[in-house]
Image (cartoon, rainbow, N blue to C red; front, top):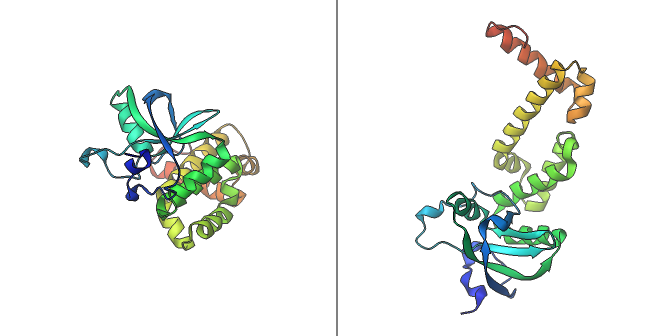
Length: 210
């Protein structure tokens, strides 16, 4: 049996002409290229587990498909598995586009993939550019902006709470609203609203300003 036939069509691998090689690899030595741990079916319900699909780079071996399975195996203490590797050594740019190709038919996953990629690229300026980023994701994935927001609702909520917490922390350190806005990449008015709401919540709980 050819190695490429081990990967079923529903695993979203598009380029079937790509040659694979099967290797035994230590689970702990692999790195997940994208944390999709909650984005695929629970593997415990499958009769036959799919193979990990990996890519070798100069920076180590990356799991590029079924990272959630990798996480499960790691947590269960599995030491070694047989995994499928795309042949050759890939650089990180090639790996990015490979990952995009693998998930081209999974729009929610692809939207999340671009979200984390942009967040990593923009760093502290991510929040300031978020509207532009949502528009870019909408165009790249081929979905409406409202759908992008719906797909990313959990991530955006977590990000907002994280920023609020950081704003309060900086405020407690004596930084001005303008300084906090600059550090977090958020509008000064937004920072002001967050801090005022935090004070009101403190008063309502009887604790005053934190």
